[in-house]
Length: 146
Image 1: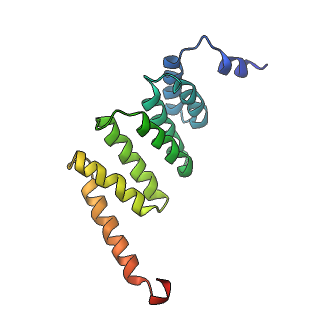
Image 2 (image 1 turned 45 degrees about the vertical axis):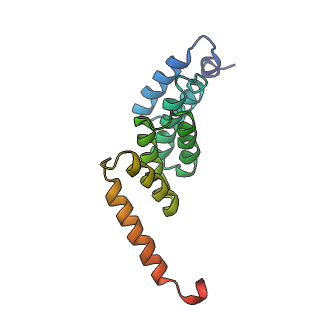
Image 3 (image 1 turned 90 degrees about the vertical axis):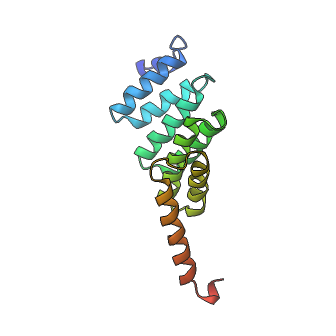
């Protein structure tokens, strides 16, 4: 067993320490190594929300948007209803969905945020822009495309 394998499998390292290591690795730009640490930290229910959210951010920073979505959805599942964290995670999820061109899903996230916190960041502008984009796309459809 290599030193790195032993270190990863070391049960004496607590989930909280794994989370802190993950943050340091993320800061250093080592996103996959950070994701590995956050996965191990997520076993602790007290850290699950933060760990999954950080995994989603690392995937997003690595332009791995398809992988970011389920990580962010896991964070939402672990989040207490109507919390500040929920709004923050939904915003990152909305931005990620937008990057994937999933306009309807992004709009759903932004609309939920607007109900909870109408003044959150640029949510109102994003909803308006995406709504306009959807209307423009719908208007460009020919009758044969319907």
